[in-house]
Amino acid sequence: MDILRIAAFSDGDTGGNPAGVSISPTLPPADEMQRIASEVGYSETAFAAPEDGAWRVRYFSPESEVPFCGHATIALGAALAMRQGNGVFELTLNQARITVEGARQGNSLSAALQSPPTRSAPVDQTLIDEALAVFGYGRDELDQRLPPARIHGGADHLLLALASREALSGMHYALDAGRRFMNAHGLVTVLLAWAEGPQRFHTRNPFASGGVYEDPATGAATAALAGYLRDLAWPHHGHIEVVQGEDMGRRSLLAADIPSAPGSSIRVYGTARLMAE
Image 1 (cartoon, helix red, strand yellow):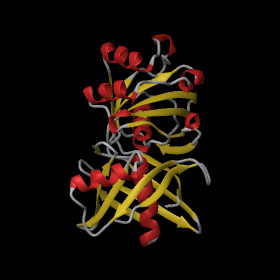
Image 2 (image 1 turned 180 degrees about the vertical axis):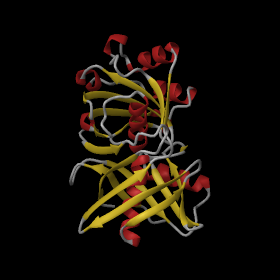
Image 3 (image 1 turned 90 degrees about the horizontal axis):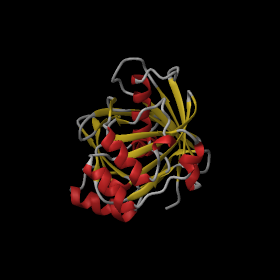
């Protein structure tokens, strides 16, 4: 099976989060997709096949299927633009229908996704204490303006906002402990964030539930963060920029537009680059 390798949310010709993309007449069996994703070894591989005028899409990490993956959707949008020309493509996921707009101009690739509906909710103190213990943070390192929350933009994430860039840089945890924590609470990832300003955030994204220590760019979590900021009435002015992956040496740039309607889809976008096989 031919697998494209595309880094989504790149910073020019560098950075971004690599994703595998498979486009085929029909989707392989689930166990075959899981095997291929494990062999590819990226945090996600997207599998797409035409179905009823749209594209049926499933996402697999090296260890499990996930309901939605933002960076793999951006990679898929770029791949579809390369294959079929620039356009807006309808995607049918396991639990939602969304779109991705892909564009190719010369050697430049870009894409924009419309996320599934977003929502956020407070979490109890027990969950917060457990998360802080996993990541070795104290309560005094949290940003009180951005309370911990369960956030959703196609998948569930725990948001922990930190009060300093230094605290974000110091993230560390044991992969097995992180996996147990995320799986026990139904979390796909934990999103650690520092607000440089009202519209600019630096984030890190442990993805232990999928067997990945950290993702350098996470579109689904960025969509969920944007929805949370809207719910919180944060002064985002309809747009945020996210810098991710710096502490991994793989700087990635994500942007999101935030409509005012509660629960509405978030537009998340960025550039992409085709990687060598």
